[in-house]
Length: 232
Image 1 (cartoon, rainbow, N blue to C red):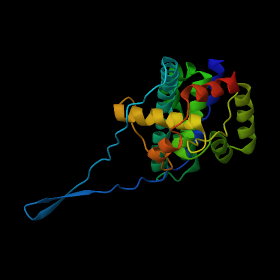
Image 2 (image 1 turned 180 degrees about the horizontal axis):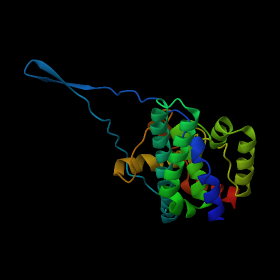
Image 3 (image 1 turned 90 degrees about the horizontal axis):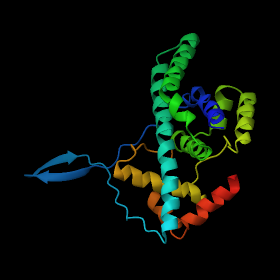
Image 4 (image 1 turned 180 degrees about the vertical axis):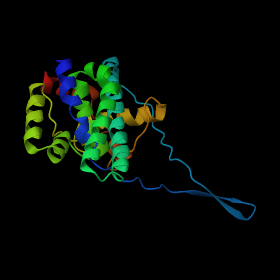
């Protein structure tokens, strides 16, 4: 199954790298007065989170099991987003259709060499997380990317193959409405602060603290058990 999952997910980078990312806004600056003169020093935003508390050792085990899955999938979504931006910047200066196709294939070949062994080891849970995180980072679903840059028929075929493994290329990342997606966001934010993952801003801004208040009463055990029950 893992080999088939690898084939399914790895045939998609060509389509992922055609979607342009929006530019990030420059954040606010802090001002300091030094001897009646002003000095502008841009400071990075610092987020401090309370240590996560667990009601039981079982809940702790569930949380850290899912943490491992998220941490494994996220770097692939981040790299996909990075390569999309790099590719679009380079394509701006390439006007020949033949050269553009050649350049895209070159990027795809690079990714194949970079990820082949790692993606072969992905589980279905990690695949589902990856599909959602690619949407988080690019603003597009895998299905829409395939449809836009290949054809509706290709999108249908890939999604049909994905459903065989209980995957859905149309899935979106929605931590405002889906508890499991909030759990992913919680894991990401803590991993960014801990330095376990390299932070990359999502395509659309996410107010983590607002989400944290919204989902403050969720049970990690219930959320993950619902997920397991759905896909068993």
